[in-house]
Image (cartoon, rainbow, N blue to C red):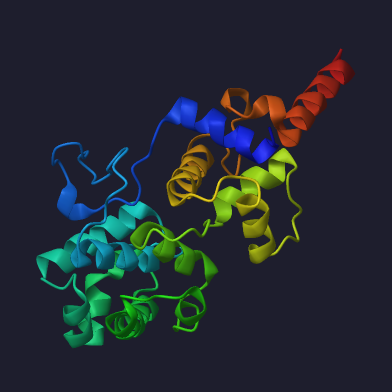
Length: 243
């Protein structure tokens, strides 16, 4: 079994299904948790409103935490502005104020406007190449939209993914986004459910243990991780020098 597939098996066994992408309108419904995560339910999103909310979330989460995005989405909902038409009709300054918690709110307001124009024309036939031409939409955001909103098989490469795989020793610092994506997609089954879960599992690992300052001692992947092994060796050598 290849290492990339092995990592997925380890994480899914321990962490279970993550239920991404969270949808605010689903909170506390049967089978849905209080944050809108739908564990083992891969038929979401079901409606245009749910699809568009995921797209909005994917844009707002750029360079910020999900907690800040949730505040922005709540503000949009309370203002009846979480729909493609309302985004298009809303004054851009007002939109920026509603999403202020997500940071870079003026830029993101423009991004939402530009995306809404694209979405209303292309929602029934979205292609990655065209999505990447939309102002403010880079590869990570585009693939998040394609995978989680439209169930298209594009693996999302983010900071957590690169940090984890770099430390394990499965990629180089200079690897490009597309090269990294191909590396993973060529190593696992082409299935949007697996792509969905694997990305979400890596985010969970990155937030809980493989942080900027890693907690290697309790990491599920420590036995296969070059960084963890080297850290142990350095610690051992340091102790030996003190004796």
